[in-house]
Every structure is written in structure tokens, then in C-alpha cells.
Length: 465
Figure 1: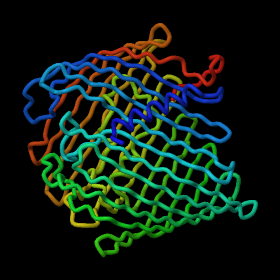
Figure 2: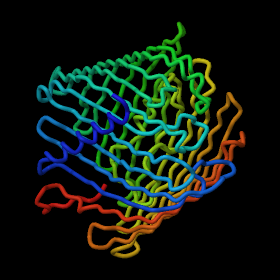
Figure 3: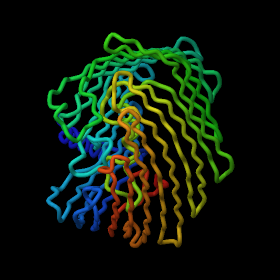
Figure 4: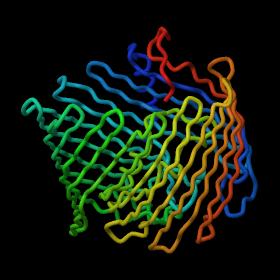
């Protein structure tokens, strides 16, 4: 099944779930149309000309819990048309579905997970009509939960995964995953688990990869590999704190070589006051481009008005689409303020990615972001956002600095309708020169978003996500 066919299949699935949603389901959707102008669609160092743009799309979020089915589906789909420059229109967006069905209640489950979106073939260059490719990450399989005693249980999972790339330049792969664990409940809010995982990745070789001029960071000698991990996981949480901590060992076998590393992951959030919360994270782990891509696309399909069209951006793809295994060291910190009319957030992260076999894709990354939203009146909102990203591809001697900015003013009228004006700015400085660019975009649009509700009678309302 091609990426576009899988996209349509999941849209149909999502709409079918929405139509059958019971009273307890959360269903949220919106429609958006806009007209704008992009002064550098090619993201070229010297822009030849700008182009008017037309965009139409919609979002869908479903969070449904039935006695046997848990379903979380998010879709953000749109069509972008350029009025000049010879670019063809493009279907952009992402669909993410996490479905879990109880074959035997509380004991045997079947899971299906799928992530569809756009990736950049050339990680050095910006997302442009020529540099986007559809990516689909799919997995399915059973999960078993068996009680040992009143506070201890045994778990086992098996998954078959298929990762596909529309362009054909990146090698597709099939992955087989198995895991077992013993979980002990320490209290009503905490648990300790001993887990073991095994992953086998088999690549489909693609002879056209080496001739692709858009993917200088793709590893063409895609070699199958195995990954094994064993670790302890501690979970705890209450109204003010949540903590997930993993500690163990991991190893990868590829090309008759074995790579060993400690495995450590930490995520902590703390509610400092009624308005302020902070979070920190750190990790050392083996991963790859497919896992990175699937983990960065969110389930919620509801963006802020005026955000760039859905698809690849600097937050949804931080690694090249090589799918070769790498060791990643990362850390992050964030702070969020939320009040009745104002929200503010600031955060940053660092990462060092080292591929296990000879690769030109090793990098160091640093980024920071800040956003501010304010309800100016009962009908109007202002959103401001900015971010900075630094990347250093150390093995090819190329680095870049990119600044992003966004300002959006929204006016709500007639209940479900909102009109907005938005300005987006991007500027990248690249040591290679050819990947430097400056881009300005403006858009004026209208969004229709019905009242968020939890039942068909519209008597109980839910806060928007």
C-alpha cells in the first residue's frame, strides 16, 4: 500500500470511528481555508520570485474509550497550491492512529499504530515542494498481561512493523519486535518493572538511492541489524509530579560488529504553583530515523490558526531519513505558565547523534523556543512564537543556524468561526552557502471549529486541547 493509499485508509478509519463514537468519546474537528503570499517558495539563497498561495484543510482528533477499545486518532490534512513558479499543488499533513482492542478483557490485547507524514529527503535543506517525501511508520501485534499475584504482573508484546518511503531513495524496512516484563505495583501511584526487548530490522535494498541528488546524508549501504535491551523502569505520579526513569544496558549487532552502551531515560514534570509547571528530560539510547519520526508526530490534530501548513518541519524531523542505528545523547528543559487569559512557555534541548557505522549523518543539535498567547478580549487572541535551531554535521563540515518566528491575530465571531491574519518568518545561515535562505509568509484565513463536546446532545462541553 502506498503512502497516499494508507493516508486515505486511515482518514476513512478515523471518520468511521467518529461516526460510531459513544457519548463518552472526545471528538474534535475543524476546517480552514486561507490565501497568502510566500516570497521564497524554493527556500533558495537568492529567491527568484515569490508566489501567492491557497490553502484548504482540516483537522480531526478522536479520543475514544469503550469497554474493549481504546482509540486515539489525530489528523491534520491540507492541500497547498502555489499560484506561480510552476510548482504543482501538494497534499500535506499527518495522520496518527493508536488503536488497542481487548481480545480477552484485561489479559490479551491487539494493537495497531500508524504514523503518516512528510519528511525531508535532504536533511540539510529546508522543506520545499521538491524536498518533501511521504513517510509511513506502521506496526501491529498482540500484548499479553498475566497477573502473578495481587501486586505483580507479567507482560509480553510482539510487533510487526513496516516503514515505507514514497520517494524510493530511502530503503524501506520491516521490523520485528518482542518484549517481556515483570511489573510490580509499589503503591497506587508508583510501579517498578524489569523489561527485556529485542528488535530485528531488515532493509529492502534500493539501487536508485545512490543516484539521488537530494539526499547527501542518506546511508546507501543499508545493513540489517539487531538491537537488544534490558532495563528497569520506575513510574510515579500524582497531582504535582510525574516521573519516568529507565536504567539498563543495550547493544546493537550490525555488519558482524557489536556496539554496547548504557541505556538511560528520564522524564520529570513538576507543578510548581497553580500556574507554573516545569519539566526536564535526558536520555542515552540507541534509536533510528523511523522511531524519531514516529515519536515526534503528535496525536492531536488541532494546530493554532496561522501555523505553517502541516508536514515536515524542524520539530517533526530532527534526524535524516537514513533509518540506520545511532546512539543519541539528549537533554531538554521547559517551563510553562497557564492562566485564564495568558499562556507562556519556554524550552530548549541539546542532542548528540552518532551513527554506528561509517556515516556522514552524525550531528550536534541545539534548539530553543518561546511562545506567548493572550486573550485580548472575549473575541480576540494574540499568539507570538519564536525558535532557534543550530545543527552541526561534523563529518561533512557543514553547520547552520535557523530562526523561526510567528505572529497570529485571531478574531472569533458567530460562535464557531474565526478569522485570522498570520506572519511567518524563517532565516537560515549555512556554512555551505547553498542552503542559506530567508523566507517571509503572510496569510489571511478563516477557520470553522464547532464547540468541543463529549456527547451528541451537546449538553456537556469540554475544553479544547
